[in-house]
Length: 200
Image 1 (cartoon, one colour):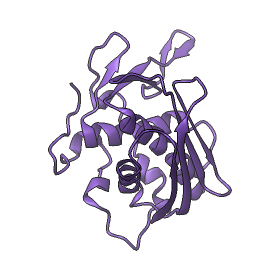
Image 2 (cartoon, rainbow, N blue to C red; image 1 turned 90 degrees about the horizontal axis):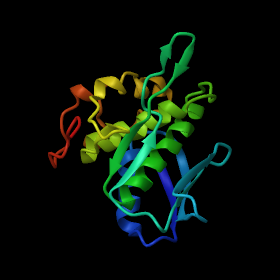
Image 3 (cartoon, rainbow, N blue to C red; image 1 turned 60 degrees about the vertical axis):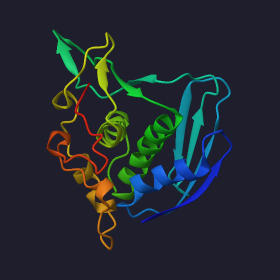
Image 4 (cartoon, one colour; image 1 turned 30 degrees about the horizontal axis):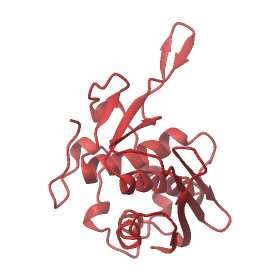
C-alpha cells in the first residue's frame, strides 16, 4: 500500500484531492510517496516523478478553465506508406481534481514500471492509458478525436497495463472496489456510483 506524504498549495481541497489519489493508489506496493501539488509558472500543467525517493510533483495552471480538453498519447501508432504517426485523442476533464488525478496516475505508472523492474524508457503512452482508463471508468470522462468525435475504448485501451506492472501490486491487501479494473475497460463493471461510460 502506498502511504502519501501530501502537500497542496492550490485552491483544491486537500481532503478531496488526497482521497482521490489514495483511492487510486490503494492496490500498489510503493511504500511512502511524497506528493506535492502546486500552481505552474504559466504552463497548463506538468508532472514529474523521481524514482529514487518516490516523489511526484503536480503543477496546474492557475488560468485553466473547465471542462478542460486534455491532449493525450492514447492512440495506437499508425502507418501511412513508410511513415508512421499517432492520432491525437483528447480526454474531457470536468475540473481541477480530475486533471490533478490524471497527472498523478500518469506519474504513478512511471513509478510502478520502475518498481516492477521493467524498462522505463518510452512509456508515455502506457502512462497516459493507465491514467485515462481510470478517469473513464471512475468518472465517465469522454475520449474524443481532435474534431470532437467520440472514440470507442477498443481504439485505445488494448494493453494489459495492470499485468505489465503486476510485480508492484500489494499482495497483502484485497483490492478496493475502485481498483478492480479488468484487463479491458469494456469488460469493467461500473463503479458503485454508476458513473461509468465508455464514451459520450
